Length: 117
Image (spheres, rainbow, N blue to C red):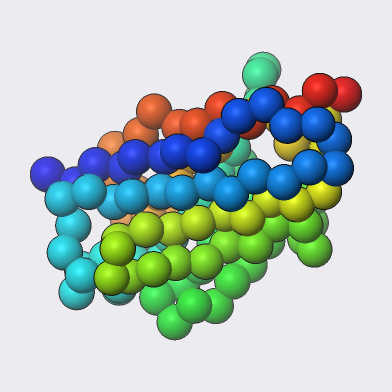
């Protein structure tokens, strides 16, 4: 059974950086490599939003709010997706999740990112 495991969050000062990781456990290389994957976030009192995605062909897209600051990447051999977050702001505070963009799996527990305002 496939399971999403996010990690790498924490408390960081404005302007700082974090690198989030997402493991799709229970998946095999040939299946994972075909996934279009995304990083989502949900801030307190707000809906979950997609902030970055990467296709199986490694085409990336970003929300306007993170463009130029966040970078999504993937390692198919490790069945992982990463989100490098630089120049963090208070409004980036949220729980971050990863998932298959086209065929969502059960959501993982997410990883908390806190950037004091």
